[in-house]
Picture 1 (cartoon, rainbow, N blue to C red):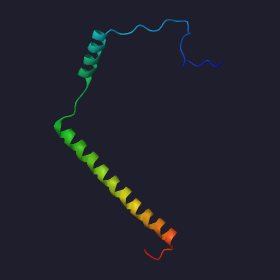
Picture 2: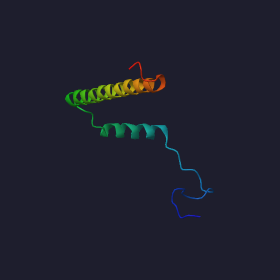
Picture 3: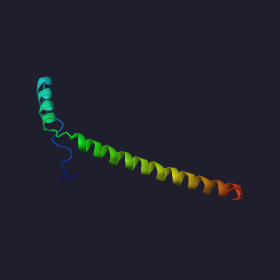
Picture 4: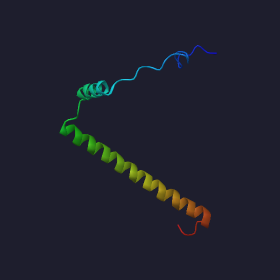
Length: 82
């Protein structure tokens, strides 16, 4: 057997104590207070960057699809209709 710490403890030990619902809620609220939300300017910038990337990738994939489709058509039909 290996000395790996991936599996901790023995099977005879008790299951860890569960957190109560109010404690869980308080912890969630505390973590959400730590979140730094982007400003409107950052949000607009991120939106433009993401949309530009998506449009470029759509154009690239459409061009590859068109080119490879024409190539496959040429290979399987003898290349007369290009």
